[in-house]
Amino acid sequence: MPLTSRCGALLLCAALVAPAAQARTFFKSGFEPATDIPATDGEAARFLTQATFGPTTADIAKVRQIGYSAWIDQQMNSVAMTAARPHMEAVAAAMTAGGTESIGQNQRLSRWFHTAMTGQDQLRQRTAWALSQIFVISDTNGSISGEPVQMSEYWDLLARNAFGYYRTLLDEVTYNPSMGKFLSHFRNRKAATGREPDENYAREVMQLFSIGVVERNIDYSPLLQNGQPIPTYDQNVISQYAKVFTGFAYNNAGTNLFGGTNNYLPMSCVATEHDTTSKVLVGGTTLPAGQSCAVDVRDGLNLLASHPNVAPFMARQLIQRFTTSNPSTAYITRVAQKFNNNGDNERGDLAAVIKQILLDPEARAANPPANFGKVREPLLRLTAVMRAWDFQLPAATQYGEIRMGMTNPTGSYAQRPLGAPTVFNFYEPDYEHPGGPLDDANLVSPEMQIINEGSTYTISNSLADYTFRYYVGMTNPPTDRPLINVSALANLATPTLMVDEVNRRMFYGQMSSNTRTTLINMLSFMNGASASEKARSLLQIAAMSPEFATQR
Image (cartoon, rainbow, N blue to C red; front, side, top):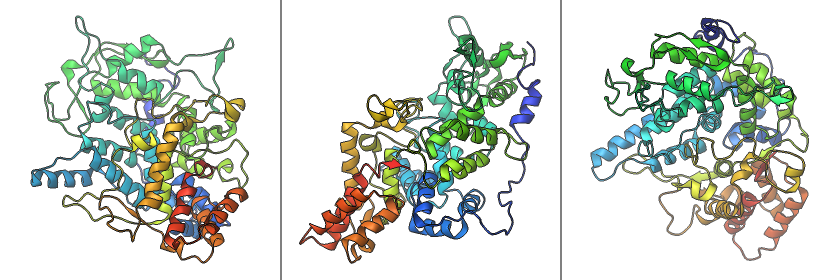
């Protein structure tokens, strides 16, 4: 049916999903006193565990001073973004000038860990981390594994759009050349004898980036017809969308699909390679024949972004990345409603969505239900340790790289920034760990898909490196990794004070009495050990504990 869909004409879709550019105002309360200041350091630290790569003592004090909402507003409106690509370009230029080395993924990872540990724009970077697990690209793919600068630009794209609009994000992801190579719509050609357009991006932009595979109610429950879920699309729609995504090439390719030079700029479209036939897309909407690539892509993405599934689809996954693996239907509904309308009749405002996720009553409940929370992502256990305590960073190399001691986190943590094994991320949002109480309660636990006997061992080994093995004051310290400084902990007078400080910084004041007693006894039995060894042993065992591996 021509130009008809759930929201009517395609131009109306565009108006609904792509608000006009405007100044964003986050400080709507003026100078009114904050009413959401946490009562304890523990409450502030728990909030920061959800919103950042880990609480610091300075951020705990800040949240207790200005409250949750104001802290979020400052992060969204006042803190400059820590960009990866400009740093990578400077390091690459220095390496090229040196003539003996070339930049690789190791430098990208060093930059990522440095930003996670020291960046001031914590909420933005944490949101980019969440988005990177939805809009996945991976350096395990040979088409982009040798392009660390371009991949850094993709990370920056996610960070720039972290508090922007979903429709803009979807557009920039679609045109990004790293995504184009990863999901193979880069240099995707229209049909010819013996050749059909590649369907990879057409499939994943629907299944993973927007609407999912079945129709959903606003609370994410499946919409049923005769007791059965209703598919959002079929193979014919995939094939039709594949035609939409034809003709993409390098930004400077001109009229030659295979021309241009490798760069990170948004892809352009070569008109002669774009399929200009009519296309029947999601919801039965028909794009007329003869449209340009840019118009086809705009209209096709508008249809996806305006689909009612997008709100609950994005709401549930973002909630899972920040606060809890098993959000209630009411929690999903509130976040999805905020996606649909941010209060100013704007759709897809990610800033409003993130704020709702973090300030929702279920997220801020002092005593959440037993099924609230999540297994802490393995890499976030490491970053939380790196932010909870003082670390001495190594001097920059002659090329400007600050090495963070972590060049292959996949081997230790089964995670790697922009390094998932497949487009389906490190784990799937609906993964249910077989056997045990989670399975019995029908609860999902995505992170448990990468937790097993082997990864438990390798995670613990790596955490031992950062908490115990490499420290300020050691003999012959390495120069390619941070060294933990445990003086603040070692200088406390008693085992009880030491354990309570660990509880405050790492467990947001919710360490169980059994764990607390065990750690105090451990320190008391360490007769003859130095204060440094006691402090480092305490941090090692605390970081390896099951309680630290979970987020409440």
